[in-house]
Length: 198
View (tube, rainbow, N blue to C red):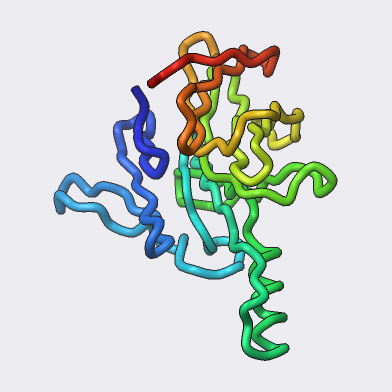
């Protein structure tokens, strides 16, 4: 069992929810008994602390990882200006934003090399070694990053992955939209097997 992809729990028990509709990150306040927005983070836009199409979040140690799938490029604009604006927005935010939980400082944005990536990061999971696994729905793969953000490669042929989970042996479970199986990536990306779920 795993949490919904837009929910994460910190080591101190703090609960975070990413409101995908409003692009706002919220933290549960036990005194007020409700979720309150995390200050100075979120909202729609292309700036370093803003989101275009937020999806999954994960907490690994003292860091929060936020997937932003970005916008798809569209030709439905009514003018040249609108078309240019849509193209600009489509280039922005296809990334994973790394936030330090203490003070909510943005530490940076991760994405694979351009030669390997024009995709949509939709979910993220962290293994016991601090390796960060990111589901890329558009490219049908899972990207792997070191704890410092170095791209370690990808595992492909996964359909359109939408959800990730990791077990105690660092196997990555990949669920794809509409699939009848869950694909399991062995630790360190060594091989893929399938589990029938229907």
